[in-house]
Amino acid sequence: MASAVYEKAASGMVPAAYYEKPADLIIEYVGRGLNYAAPLTQAVEGALIKAMPEAYSTVTNYLATTRSPLSEGFPLMNPVQVLLVMVSYLTIVFVGKAIMSNFTRIEAKTFSLFHNFAMVSISAYMCYGVVVQALADKYTLFTNPGDNTATGYPMAKIIWVFYVSKIPEFIDTFIMVIKKNNRQISFLHIYHHCSIFGVWWFVFLQAPNGDAYFSAALNSYIHVIMYGYYFLSSIGVKQVSFVKRYITMSQMTQFMLNFFQASYNIVDCLYLRPEQYARGELYPLNLSVILWFYMISMLGLFYNFFVQDRRRVLAEKKAATYGKKRN
Image: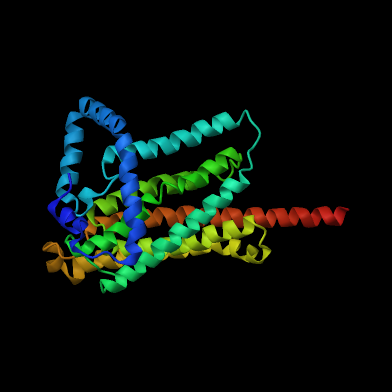
């Protein structure tokens, strides 16, 4: 059931900018697709209510009291749907690995090419849309409160697209599965892809605009570089080979900036402007705390990956040099 605020915003009373049109189409078609999955969602929801009535009631009551009125009308906001998506991802990965152990690898070069191009395109669109809308809404770098009025709807639409874009990112893992690149399907990879979808669902549920813009714009920009590199290297553009060594460093820089944003917002709420925070005029503190801890986990895992990868590369170079000397 959509809120009155959402209905007013979606009715067209707030004129849509040209860059909102793709978001409108994605929202419409995802909503239509979810209608076909409604029987499954209802069945799982009924089973959860029957198995854990008190826990289910506690969770739904909490979500109902903390959610933004703008997020209520968007598709894929039911927590059961989110749970089904995450469980489906994990199931496909682990069952897929077991199945592929009995088959030869599938290169999927053409499919990977189209996937990378699609991700470059959607990432560029999201980065552009978020930045332009942030300028239109006169955002500052940090400390932008959530806007639960109809004027916050344009940014909410693009942030929703960013949240949903985490699903096609799952295809990265599926390609690794069919190519049998099991070394790449690490804990870091699965944790990052699975958890980020749930985190962004919760962020959008409570504050579908405001300071969420910063992470969305920054991550989209990094993904333009990352998927752009994958796309160009797959079609044989050797001039981009130098980019590979900087991708992990760019991701870690992104996490550091997100960590700084979360830290600043926490200090702002608790020490700089506690009165405004008490009146609910600042970006939700709990979201900043979640971002703070999540960025610590990502920095730790990516740093470990970076160190291990550097060691592997150096070991391979050393082995190659030793082999040449022996020959």
